Image 1 (cartoon, rainbow, N blue to C red):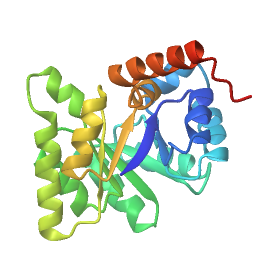
Image 2: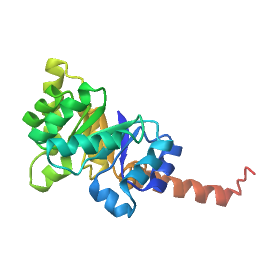
Image 3: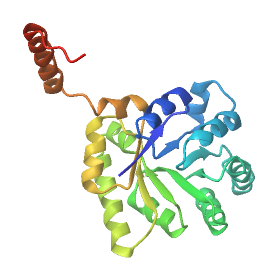
Length: 217
């Protein structure tokens, strides 16, 4: 499974990239706002050192506006994935972009029917939002399962990019279901290394080494 990091924080991306944990990056207007930087500037900087797809989202909601903005974003680098919303205009823009050989990430997916339409439109990635469904007492992971079944039934090549990841359990559950990609905040990805028994065992080893006077250097 591929790991995308969901942030516009360049320093945080660098840290994870140096550890080999970054296969791509996803951004959105909210993350760009949080970074306090110009969208074109920060996306260009990320693309400069991340080899995988970097999702940059349009802000227009109409077809013509999405096409104009998507083409502008695509000029930043070859690894740009144009991010469009799962609306009729967004799907229309998706079809146009993919027909031109551009990568497209269709975002804000909340149903299997929406995911099916995105695949028919040729989306490179479909981004179902797990956490936001969970917030409504709906099962976000069940949506991932449904999309996996549908895509496998018909051989769709659109990759399932599980988004709105809130916990480390979301990540392992998505891996078991067979999501192609997860995108998560840096803190959640780093938290995958944490376990109370690891901490407890390490504390014991450190104390025993100190008591025994063990020195390696």
